Image (cartoon, rainbow, N blue to C red; front, side, top):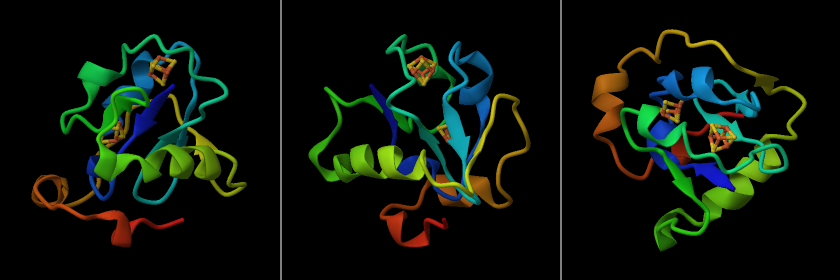
Length: 108
Ligand code: SF4
Ligand code: F3S
């Protein structure tokens, strides 16, 4: 399956959602996740993300592996809604795109 990693947090560009044939992106306040039970591994969302946040669970870096569980868990969060249309990114997304260790800012 494909996984949304830390780079998405506080940026949420949403370019990824418009190409997904399964509509399996779920949206929270400042981050998106992929529902791993619905993703068909087509990979077409990967090049859409301006901050390269989407990676295969087979190729995910060690320091991002915890996002596999985060995607699975948050995709079942009742407050998170399916998103399939592009919308404006988060305010200040350009500044946040350069920030590391953003997990502490994840809202859910
Ligand atoms: Fe959707 Fe394909 Fe991306 Fe999975 S890999 S989230 S099915 S676009
Ligand atoms: Fe996030 Fe990239 Fe999609 S920033 S919302 S994974 S385009």
